[in-house]
Length: 628
Image 1: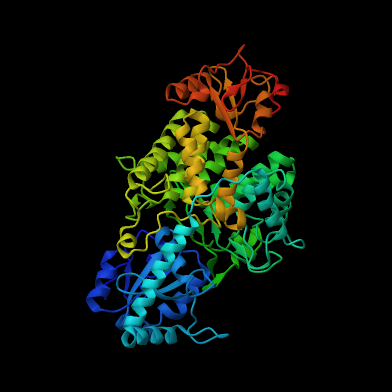
Image 2 (image 1 turned 120 degrees about the vertical axis):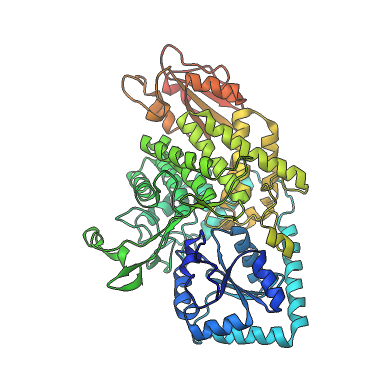
């Protein structure tokens, strides 16, 4: 049996390399093999830090007898959902036709053309609580394929057609919501609040960082956001030792977390807690932000820059793999234990979230070291994940690059993060790189036609496209922003920096595709609603120019900032706050960022320019003049 996973980039795939299952990686070769053998496909989709993925691997995929049965009747494909998010999204949508309990491991049975005809999640080795055993599922699916082939293929075709229709309906353009409609979405979220324990709903309970970001945008939503963030900070969902947040809690009171810690959760929550401190000045918000940053820099940060995608929930203690036990130990006890492993692959989009969060939080909380970390990550991403033609790759592991296609998420999140880094560091090179990424997606969107202004260069996953499963616009965003929201957000920021209306039009057109859904189901569209809130508000821009020789990343106080202007700027609520040196302001302007034109420091002092829609007040050096 060929071992096709041994040299995979994905640690999740490599963890299955020694299974007796004859695994194939995702790609056209696997489907070609299924067509050659005329057998259905089993897709097993998960990720390296997924607890139930580990369980199913130990119970079923390591069983030689079951593996022999699987190998004889199926072509088995193992997919890392983090490496191939488009594949995961497509089959999650297909699986929704068969089960309401979506999650990972995702177990999908498909025709040799890749079209799903049955799906579920975790299947136990023996029947439990009404859940069929994995062996019984294999028998039933193989029997259906052999005895009722025409019905199976017809059902698969209907699923594809239904998904295409649903996608078209879901992305029909609507008018953007006004302030009243946005506050109605806040009211819906307030109704869903767990008044006793905080958060939303009962159990399982997730951080839903994009929703918190939206609530922080709206004055009507801020009390709910602050309550939720404080409850989370005090709950078992946060690791008191390393500072990071776990992925979700299995109980309504935030107890019994699933202990994997994801880069995206912690990056987005860092931004949320920094914003909460900006709005409230409460010590708990600052302490929590500091703890999250310590986890990012101390655990996930990679040598040479960049951040690993996650830390596992399981570790080896006393010779056994156990979930969560490491995190239940005291700091002293942890010192003698093997820490849970880190999934060291570097994902472009998730690193974009981290770069942006560290840069913005560094400005708000005056943490220059965080800008250094964000700069190192940005340098690695642009050096290793950007091809000569400017397009991106999605994943690297060390110096190895995955063949997985970059997605809208990668372009949008990285562009958004680079813009935040540019504003916090005062370096126009990052904004130039961000604009290039957005322009690539606008050009690809224009060439593709259709209603969405953005398209990932290269057109997405070719196997999905050939199977009729590709979804051009995936608007879903639960745990982190969609690629559409990230790209539209970056385009809006570019408009605020350049004055070019094409970026504003693109942001609005992108958000019109999800506006109808978002106001009705705000829990699934937090980032989109946050951007819609900014689009509905006046555009406020604040540029501070430092005298020649001052370092924008140091955020000085004392002699270099005698009036305390920079201290006031750090906590200003403007959506665009830029701190630049005089030479950088000139470089920004020369590169087409009109907001910086003719901006200079006056009298050898930090000088602020507060603007509404590019109409700026007279320059000031007194922080009292910065009231919005």
